[in-house]
Amino acid sequence: MADVVFSVRNLTKSYAARGTRANDDLTFDVVRGEIFGVLGDNGAGKTTLVRQMVGLTAPDSGSVELFGRDIRQDLPRLRTTVSFMPQSSDAMNRLTVRESLYYIARLRGAGRVAARSETTSQLETWRLGESASTEAVKLSGGQRRLLQLAIATTGRLPVLVLDEPTNDLDPLNREHVWATLSALNRDLGTTVFFITHDAVEAEKIIDRVAIMRGGRILALGEPHELRREQGRRIRVAYRDRSAGGGLSWQRYAADIEDLPAIAGSLVGDDVTDLLVRTETIEDLYKSYVQNPALP
Amino acid sequence: MSRTRRYLDQLSILCLVQLRNWRWTWKPMLVMGIATPALIMFALAALSGDRGGDDAVHIAGGAITLTLMFQNTNRVAQNFAYMKAMGTLDLFRTMPVSLNALTYATVTSFFFLSLPGVVATLLVARLFLDVDVRPGLVAVPVLLLAAWALAGLGAAIGALCRSPETSSSVSLATSMALLFLGPVYIPADRLPDWLTALSHASPSTYASSAVRAAFFGQPTDGLWLDLVVLLVFGIAFSALSRRVLASAR
Image (tube, rainbow over all chains, first blue to last red; front, side, top):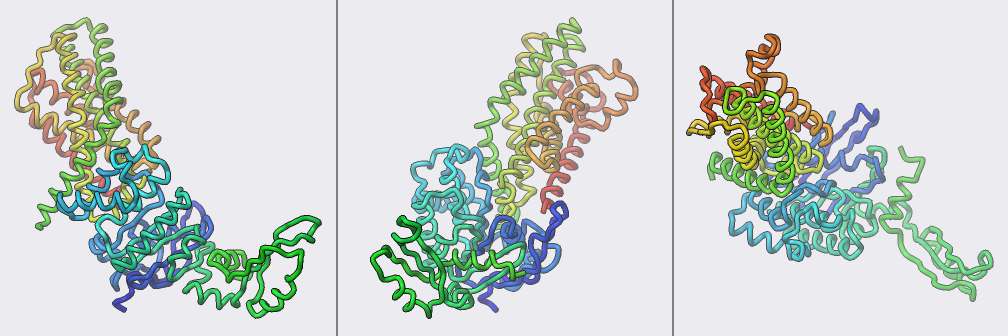
């Protein structure tokens, strides 16, 4: 039990104005030291979920416990244990990047010298050194996102909750973000809980994943467990000169047991660039959210 | 670290954060905090024809109150609404930061940011209205409490409004109503009785009365009462804004 960071039980939240349940009876645990990702399309209820987990939104029913205590009973502990990165990236407005990091470190309890030292380290970690004297409002969208991540990781709190950490980022910076979060998890044991659309990139570091649709969790587990549930499918892609008279890509999913037969059938002069891979989290995500049989 | 020490640390850090707002407030201060009060002063002085007399003192006191309102009520409302819309408040609410300290730091910082406008308006009043500017020590608590009550009103408006645009309109409309529906620019004896009675519910009435006494030596029988009422307004508005911000879930 001590290893459970968040214990979410029957969490339900509705918005009267929209007439929908944003979260419908969600139950799961987040374990200490894991990297837990939540995937879902727009309107799946992901942001509502994280806002309840950090005490910004009150649930209609159900509870969120942090280390075994309801977060509403122990807000000071929540504030000093969990760091949250909201989706909006304009929080620091007219402060410069350096000022933002320094004051956040101070507000999280660091003294002047420690805050200065942490600011320098964060500027380097998040590649913001060249923008250190730029006001937050004048940064590009990607740099603002990096600043938000730097703010969230300032103070090295043991739990990070991140709402769309790689929005607005180019591929190189996305890769850097996942590598940095992975390093924090590996080196400091930071528990990372995030929501994203970016299934392909997230797969590199994720320990467990929850797939949401319409306020519910459709699937939850380690990626390999979900793959097994889906029948250990593979994805096959190849270029075929004979198809439709031109050179075109063919793609389909198949059971892994059928691989020898598939390989045999595709040997020929017309088939080039044969690619065979196991299903990614993105494939699983699509197969879950597009499955009309699921509730 | 004791709780008091920690609170004071937070307060000073948040003040430094909020003082960085000078980067955007200086331009509106030139227009709304100095030029607009000066123009209204010229217009009313031309209408009244008074120089150095009671009317001129009222006009100058009204101009200082207007400067304080623009720089405190409107800017603080804008700041709170912006913090709500852009996620700054969410960020602070997920940190070990007291909403109480945030509210007081914001109000205090915008008070300091309003001081250049007050000084400039006093100079304009001295030069063009021939009013005798002689601030005593009491000017310090007068300015502090007047700014605090008006900024508290701004904080409450900013906390209650759903967007920066709504907050901007509501705070401007409120400022105009409080300025002209009471004895701020115009002496009370020239206003209808119902309006004078209504104006007792407005912080600008007490702010302008205290400003006239503290800066222009206008005799008053209730300076300390003005200060007490401004203190009560400040406490009430700040408490209201904290309550709204804390329950905004």
